[in-house]
Image: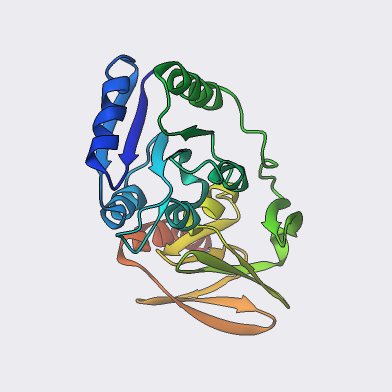
Length: 243
């Protein structure tokens, strides 16, 4: 099984060292190397990969490894690489697959790769699976049950999302793409890069926005061009049935 990976380190020598190890494992396929974490972020927001080898401290750049993981969320798997052992505990806070303390041996590197391979071939166990009636979200340090029938829409705001229910607003530090993966497509639809709406609350569809019911009020939400066809496909079966 091939494992796609990205390497991020502000020191080119560290990347070259890692590439030397990777050459000895044919199943590892490098799809990108970056000494600039900002460019790496842009790439990873658009390109899914199996694992990211991530340096933690990159002092000459506005973002470090922890910042990148905070923004990207759990859409990728991560292995932290750093010369600072105090980040070992921090890596567990972000559900990293492993932590490599520089300078690390090939044997230690191979062990980390095996952990990735096991994670890719095993079903995830760190979060409950999505159900048709509810999901669980990580909120204020605990897994919180969220009844899907109460959700009107979800909005992305930088590295956070806000879930709007009938009466509350729940703010979580995660990417909108990650929450979208947990939601059943029969109940929710993406209408914009920053919005997901409940199909049951979708009351109006116009050229540039949809109207979603929340607490008895109609909320206008923009339609993204790339999502317009999916929205129209959603309502056409209903229209045809009424003819």
